[in-house]
Length: 171
Image 1: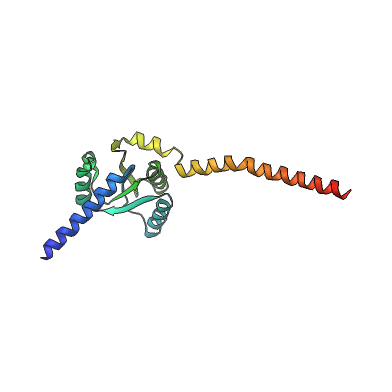
Image 2: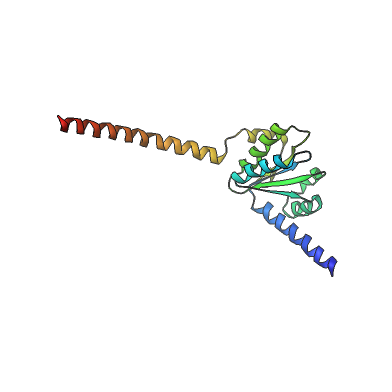
């Protein structure tokens, strides 16, 4: 009976990972050995801010989920300590955040094992190129700034006109 419950629990974990992989626009598998609790907390906060789901995973369970999701090519990287980060809305976010963190930490403590985007396994070169792109969040912030700049100038012009009108009325 206890073994049946354990088996059902494991099946549920695999099903949840499979669902996460199927819904992801992109995903990254990393080796996180050697980072401190504070560094892990910093990483998780940054990923959360960017809408990225992040899980420490058991290799055997994620292997099954990868196989069921059509990403069995990634099985070969599943050794050691593995975590999985997936992004749904911004496919660049998990790659960018984890690449930046890996540079900060150094390859001996934290490194990207593999990544996929829209069902395609990426090469290390493709991962490096995608990490240099601007994220959706940053692009939106730039766009909002560009759109608000003329409005801010218009407000200054309106204030100047209002000041001239009040000066003319006072004379």
